[in-house]
Image 1 (cartoon, rainbow, N blue to C red):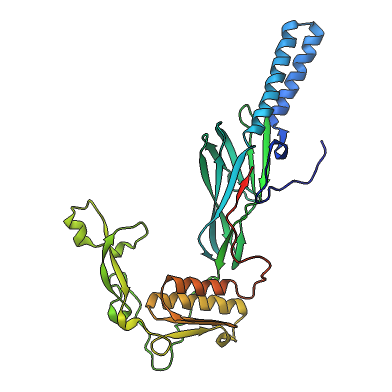
Image 2: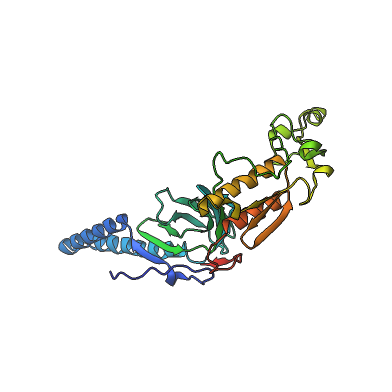
Length: 337
């Protein structure tokens, strides 16, 4: 057998049976040795039934090689990136295996290249699809590309292993790791430090939030915001959550009750340490309800509050001084296999 360079599956190829690699498995090698022994016995003893058994078993192995290849060929592959994460945590990618043919696919192994974790196993019905989640360690800030994966299968008899490699075109944004035990926010002169929110008492109008109403419970809502009175009125059949909004006196601009976090002001720290402290301050300001802005080199973000402001600041910190050799957003592709 001649070794050759592995042909990686790009973003949008047409991968037919000619792109699926096939090799005999250990069971297949043992089966080949058994066929050789049967053929030698049939020749020595001139057994017609021995010839028939040997050739029938060889025909089954050839059919197994064909079906092992057809089990992979024709699949559509799509990768979906997960939500942004912080450095030193784990990012999640979702791989979708789509079967657009009329025959089901069985026992497809999905393994991450270079990972020691057990590969995922997927069965796909006819005209169906399945999703497999892979978890990757996010070691540093910036864009984290999805790792290459290996698709393989030995269905139906296990005598041959059909496999191919795929490089998903998806990535996740990794924010800087917030500094542990970061100092307090650098408040302007004459401004008091806002009190932190406690689980028992949400922030009121003097703490930047006020009660706006009650809505139906959604997965992910904090348990401390459950509206127990409304739940009791419905005998516990439905769950409700309290909804808060920014108080009118807390919606201030840059001239009163806001801060601007500056990268240049932390010149005594290393560049990565600056970004970690700024990330911690962004989260701290968001928790306390104090409008905050960011000045990072030539980029300036006006003071504001909310999830969009937090994500914009963390995104700017994650992409600071990174090479721009690829577009900021990747198109959603489906790779045809």
